[in-house]
Image 1 (cartoon, rainbow, N blue to C red):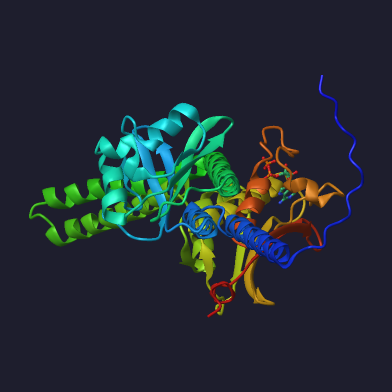
Image 2 (cartoon, rainbow, N blue to C red):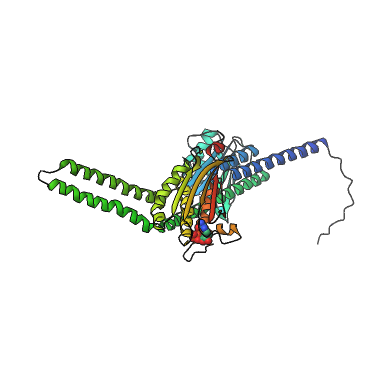
Length: 443
Ligand code: ADP
């Protein structure tokens, strides 16, 4: 066995100028890498819903820091890979957004097999180029690519995509550079995962919001049916009257015409009821509109009108006529109103002594559009008002306890807040405040 010879202490070598320069370069390089990594993280934080700017930043930084000319980020799909970002020289073959097949023998096919980086020192000497695979012919002959690197994006050992960077000169990539691109690939995978989860969460939230909206409308079916019955029976009566006027001798055309006109009006009334209900229960992706909150409230009030009458509740609206508009999804904000109003109606439906009064008001206070829903029910029977907004908190025998929690999510997604307090002298007061469009737009 070879013995390790003990070495005597070595006198520390004075750093030479060349060493110092190299050290300095390393520090500068590291600082540049760190700056690039934080730029990527910033773009992930700034646009969690939009991968495009994130992938662009990653590709540009990986290419620049490895002193390469062209870079691209690809994501694998069922039938090949999609080019989602590219930087450097443009070529008509490689176009952002286009889907490419994986050709046998191509670097992408090799990466699929090995799940490790594919590094080709000289692409012009590689078998894939001699196979005349179109993508590689384009790289070598049109862009002039020589040294080539493709690094996988792996999620739990599953290949999701890759980052490729290429040089228009023959200069193989160093291990450090391959490591760096691998770190960028990891960031791209994280970004992909964050947006995927975000999308799933939004989808689940939307489904839940839709389900609670349908449930809220369920409370109104009785009174809505009643509201539809009115124009329907009026139509029947007018139709009968109209035919009687026509069978008179001589036929009373003018009177019959009036009956028909009344029928048309009732048809319009009935279809307006159906449209409003349909607008609230239909499943539609969220939209961003400029909304007049007063109009949105009045529409909700017409939907709940029958329920208010049935429960003998007097409704008062005090809507500010100088209210700035708000930006967001009209149906979602109407859902908030609908939930608050239905809660108020339900709270007052058990009141036997005293008045049942619902008061809806809007005003513009401190740069906010504020909406208040007041009732004269028994009030909030809890010391912990925040509890009301927790999912599944309910004091109703058949309650879901989701209404207020969803309402708060919707309001917060619109940049606002929703809170509860006791109403004076009795009942509950729910308020929400939204930023007006002007502060959001900075106009
Ligand atoms: P649900 O209506 O299914 O119970 P919500 O999340 O809408 O679910 O409401 C949670 C709870 O908040 C209700 O069960 C009730 O105890 C209380 N609450 C909500 N609105 C009022 C109100 N206007 N007056 C009194 N209590 C209310």
